[in-house]
Length: 593
Image (cartoon, rainbow, N blue to C red; front, top):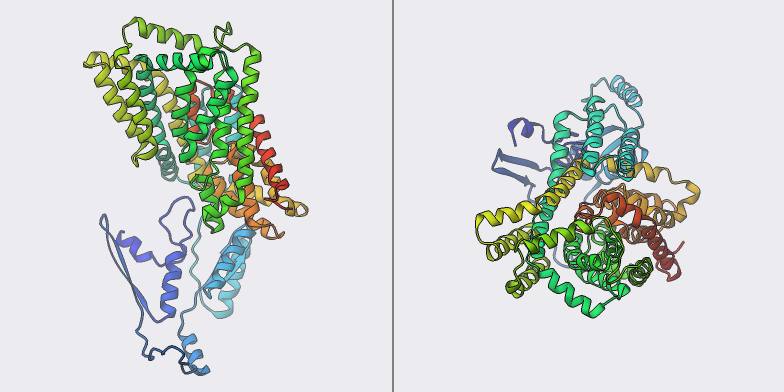
């Protein structure tokens, strides 16, 4: 750290973190605690190299007690003398959120620090002036987070941003990338003009947001290229023909197979890998039978939602960390609801397979589905251009399976796995720079279109998540809970989980909203585990239809479906699935009121 930062590092409320992420109290309290034990902290720091902090505490002169031996009682005069030598720290905090003040006061009491909370700066200034006049001493005033927009206004701005994006997408006014970047830019401009954040801070938020999704964008580019190459060489044609001989005109069987593959593929808890395993394998079959790609996605996301409840899945682990319990313990509590969810997922496949069959889907169907003709013409053009490699079918099949296995088991970035897969596939199937360039260009359009959407979603997440606006939204929602409905908190949040999933990313939902709701539930005697279970189970159902989850765009990109069509098809069905799981939790005794 620089010399300027080092000189102020122990000052209360001084922090180098942006966007209200730090309170600036951590090191101040460390110094206070160490000093209370008659010790001191020594700091050595060199910019670009690192920092070493050494804590020195005096060696006790008292003889170590033997087991069972009772030490001498410390007399009252000595205790009072030691207490009088302890440096005192008094803090006056002003915040318009009473819950924040309550947390600060509680934590300060634990470490014997005096903290007085005020609901406004005017109240704090009056109390400060009174204390200064009373004892004839001026106090240091450090203003933290003096924003022109309070938490309520920030939350309202966040809701308005999300609603505007969803409206633009559902009404087909613009493409997702433009909606994400355009609306997020307007929001960022409002935050800058109101003095809430500086331009440089907003730039940092956007940078962090894009960093969070850039790996997904890279994964999409190279996965599309890899599976495009496998399509060009004719590998999927051979597989489809073999499958068609077995399932024939059994549309329901194909739908059920989709569900099972998605469940097995999601055992690793990764949404991206499940989409990459399921959609490229099943989409050609859906095209052959004239089944809608939206149905493929609906079956996939339903199966993935219930399988994502496993203890190594992100939502379950996040909730367990908030509760302070092992993820396996939480999973065992919600397992009956997951088993019901698996049954519902299988029913979803059978039901929607039957719907497709009644529409006329099947072998030699005359149905016309938008987008299928173009892909079939492209595949036919590939065959006519001599891109098929029937003699290399065994190699391409083994190589594809090797890539999928590596995707699941190797601890390397998924996008790197597909990078290597593309390199080998191009070198073996299409030697020569000219032909390789032709193949890459033929698949560049859809890859770059969806990658740009994912990166644009990163801008949106940076503006709302890294600026802490989503956390303010969570606090605001929790504050709207009527006192009379407090004991029904798990039921209320369970019913609302699917709509809320469209607004909150995974981290803000579980690390922002869940702790606040647990605190609200504690006031009414609600078991924190019940609140967490309803949020995990009911929210998971809708994870992969949410526009704030990057993997969603990977799935719709692979299936060739617009985000608006995906949400319209899945939303109410998934909402119904989550409510059935909630009712099952009540009936099976997982949840109690």
